[in-house]
Image: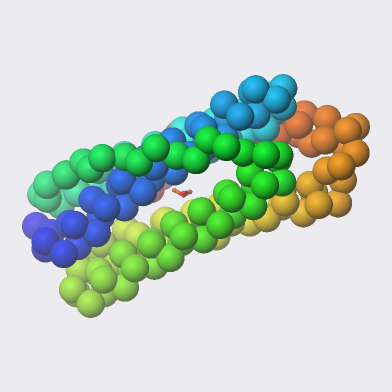
Amino acid sequence: MINEKVENILNSQINKEFYSAYLYLAMSAFFDEIGLFGFSNWTKVQAKEEMDHGMILFDYIIERDGTVKLEQIDAPQRDFQNPLQVFEKILEHEKFVTDSINCVASMSEDECDLATRHFINWYISEQVEEEANARDVITKLKMFGDEKSSLFHLDQELAKREYKAHSYKN
Ligand code: OFO
């Protein structure tokens, strides 16, 4: 059984993960519109990973005999200007999600829910990776982004990202 405070914060995290999926899909649509299909692929793969993050939390609440309470998902930003602005937004958003995950960790500790504290470690590591991925693309865009041929090569690199289903159990 899971206590109500922890259940609520986990439900709210589900909403943030699905919002993240929405945000990445909006970014993917923007990249499709401007013909950067590799960037579009990268953000679309990320959107699928975000749905996995939401579903892992969903399954975990059920496994702990809790209640999943789905909330309304806000509409994401749609007015993007260029790839650098999008990736800066991604980094800012992922930092926000990292803070939110840290709050789940600290609440589960306060509530002596060691199972959730252990479970959330997977997300803590995932956030380190997500912030690093965004920072990596920002660095490249700042170095070469204004040159069309470099942008073309970066687009080809991002086109290679493949979706692999995420699960905290393997
Ligand atoms: Fe789910 O990690 Fe990004 O938002």
